[in-house]
Length: 230
Length: 322
Image (cartoon, rainbow over all chains, first blue to last red; front, side, top):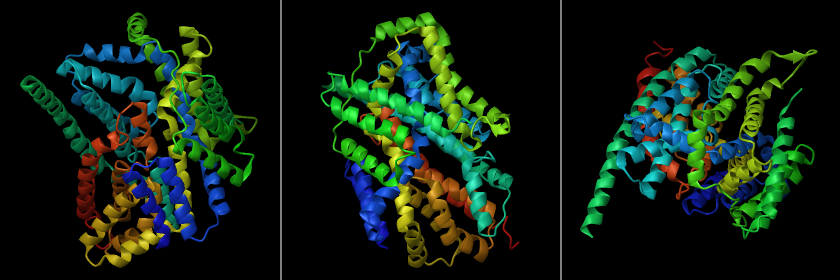
């Protein structure tokens, strides 16, 4: 049971808002020592895995392009585009993005989205502009909430869309693992049975997004009232 | 053949430039911390493949210490003011979206096309890494197009990139570091311990209890590891296959598919899934590091309940015992 110590360390570290890098370092040491690994073995394993996973960070290469376009007014353009659409509200806009993200992911087009490439330069400013159009001015707390919802719509969309595509990593992993345990399943079956959850995700998160508009309006009204009372 | 190594050299040069520019940025009181952090990251891309596991471990330790003890700050390259940006946006119109959309379009096209192209029997692009290489290619093309069109000074994209990467700060290495922690956990046998814990402490003689434990276990274990792919083999070997499929005759495809999606509910709730939850909070300049997670938790909880109900209703109905 002692290797679980690392999980406890990381959970505690996140709960106490310790810098995550330090929490991870301590967790690695805790689990490693508990499993009787030496410091050199732990460092080597960390170094090996860090090196093997460099491809995860390749996406940061997009930042110079996005920065350059932002300097030329990309975010402002995204705002202008949405402020002309009279039907646009925060909730409806993100609902459309959620649906598009789910559909494209389910066709295997997972790269049509992402936080650095699409959410920061396009979706978040559009959602903010929609908020400003319906609410008038938007305070910092509300702005942060709208942005967080833009990121969440991307995550929910891709997580509960991609598994419908038969050649996605998780389907291949499932099939490979079950096969090695002597159970044969067809990729098509796996992707078909992902559809009920995908629909449920759209209904659940979509409903929350539509309720968000009313919630933001209520907060705004409550704030105005408390300001007037002072 | 174009491999990931080519992309890593590109990345190493970009991060190396961030390091040099950080060192020269007098507006940042912690400029040498930034220089050390991005310099080490650049070294990982440029030399990581050649220096061996232990030296890479030391490099990671350096990154953790510099980033973990708050030795890095935010560089503030000269920004263009909002009025000028709005004027530019009005003048350039919707063409501004063009270069931004080149990136996903190239990533997509490359993924479809490169697999079929080979020169003299050798594939042009490493077939296992087509997605990442196509993404990098899309970025390079978009950068070229934007430079030709906007004609800024050559350092401008690097300055802008540094502005954005400094917003992310230490969180930039979090996804890679968490993947490494996952490797340590696997080596230390954390997965096995969780499986033992789940099977020995809960009486698993009712189909409903088994389904609930499997789905909740996938979500919780995924939250702890930050990755449903790490949780799936453990939970499925401990509970899914022996109990749901073999003992109670459930359908393995339904068990596996909905089980994995239960794990994704866990992904929505955890700082361990840094690239989905923590990096965007930094990129969007949220005051709360957990801001994205907080708005995702209600969806995650509701969907986990739906998944559990779906699995219980479907997995035995379409099972092998009927």
